[in-house]
Length: 139
Image (cartoon, rainbow, N blue to C red):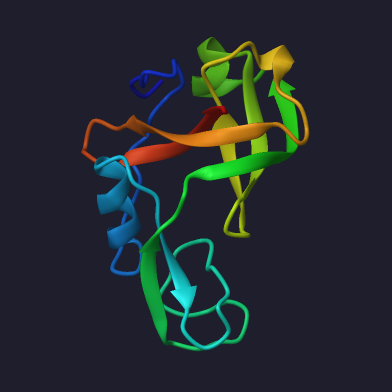
């Protein structure tokens, strides 16, 4: 298993590239930075240098609020492999206040208390290499 973060979950280091480097650099500083299309105002997820809605290559980065709501979730109680010792944990889709839905974990609470519609806030689990993984905790 990779190292564990403050959440008690594994923190495998992400693989940044030119399109995602700004996102990962911000996570290391505890900020959620996202690109927004300059042409259609769509907030782009997963971070990249073009709009996945209209195809524009004109995007600007901004600091997102880090607020969202649980759109869907499940409690993983048994899992093979390196995450086995971390179970039970919550795997969820969180709908960000700015629009996109992200796959993530809900941490810092009893997994059985997480529910659809619950308000959550971004937290960042540092990895051994510097960037942090985006996770959420109840608001």
